[in-house]
Image (cartoon, chains in turn brown, yellow):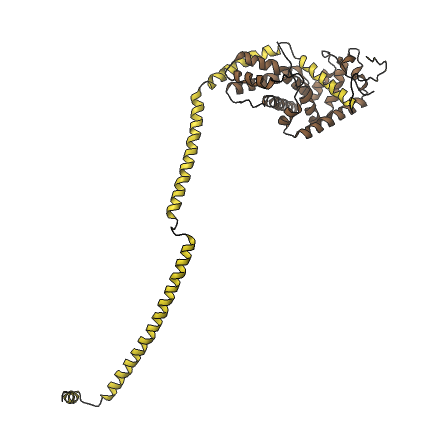
Length: 214
Length: 162
């Protein structure tokens, strides 16, 4: 069964469980490896997709990331010290940057690619596809630095503490960066008249508490 | 529940210093969740299929504990060799180093200097007396030569023998 674990729904003993899984993976345990994939594949995919704006490319990146992780874990090249997630998402960020550089050399703009999916219907949950597209549009207008901190937090589902290890920045700095990025996104959404629909889509469920300032 | 007919929406159950930021944050969480769930349903299966071989291959390599042991042993050897080299260097330095401590050496040099001064002084006194004696001897010899220059040595011998 696929689980999409993130910072909000981790069990208290998740760290010990993860350490146990990683120890078993290093001995070639396929069931443990399947559990690792179930826990993290979609988070890696979401981060890659948000950065690249292309589902196929995001899946390629996800494959590449997990191939690297499998090789390293299998060879005993990783010892768990509570830093698996930062390591995993650092690999992901590096792959995404590599892909962005490759696209730049080839003269392909990832932004233009992402523009095509901005309008594409997305599976709606509590926000409608139109609002999700607006949010993606707003994200696309942010600087790389601002996007990075938002995507690690909301797409990869990392805690701020884990993000400090990936970005090598103090917690206070990261919190400030995240706050500034949110403000900028809000400004962009306000300017585009997008803040109002944040909670007022026809598919929006008001009871989820998703809205904007009155 | 508050269904607003305008575009201005309210937050339900939100109370905080900046609810608008929280609303954006919450919307971003929803976006992240949507992106995660938008992955193909076969993503995990494909990942598993493509990486299992890598895991098995790497696992076979990892299963040889001898490699790890040899690696750690070689490090031990390196450390032991480094310690041995340092010990040899220390022993050589101790062997070459002068036995007496620096203060003792200084006092010995001072005493030696005093001895040398005394010897030089004594020698200068001795030289002075010796030179006087030589001068006196030289003068006596000269006087004797002058006084005896007019005499026949045979007569002198006869007188003396008398």
